[in-house]
Amino acid sequence: MVSRARLLWVALAVVVVVIGVVGVLSSRGVPTAEGPIEETPTPTPTPTAVRTPAAPVSGEKIKRGAAVTELVVPAVAGLSQALSDPSVPVELESVAGGLALADLKAEVFTLSKEGLHQVGSPKVVSAKVVSTRVAASPPTVVVHVCLDRSAVKVLDATGKDMTNPSAASRVLQVWKMASTESGWKLVDRTFTRKLTC
Image (tube, rainbow, N blue to C red):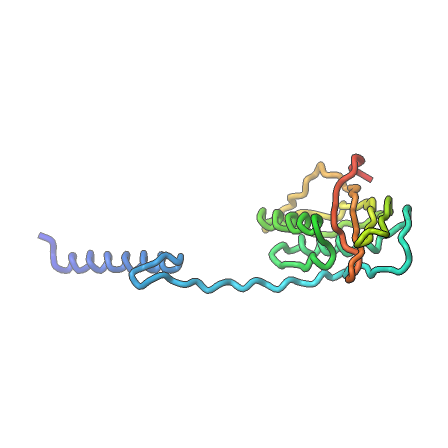
């Protein structure tokens, strides 16, 4: 015959298990006999300003063949800032728009999802205008941008270097820049057939 003390211990254990299960379900927002538990929304962090503002719109005409490093540095700096800590949003809208903005945000999201971050920034080796559309609305220029990525590393959360060892240290990209009220912004970014520079 089972003793009365043993039955009390079993009953107490069952009560503790039930309370634990209800607590777990409640913490996950699962409805219980008392009704659904409303979760407190996590506030969205305010985006951080890009440290290097967009280059101001100049009154002088930008000509084909001109060196325009000052036009591309803000977008390079903004992306580097965002990739250095993908969990902190950066106002990339201040240096990019259109397809390029979506492209930059996707790059930051991918790095964040993989638990990675960037250390170091690419250096603009050259930025040369290859075509202009000053009569367009807004005025645009196409620039061949040579970036030196030799000082850039991609690290995981533990600090392990995840940089692709076979990646070229210099890359040549084609950037379309648009003149806006707040300055020149990157609006599209592609690669040339000649990948390195």
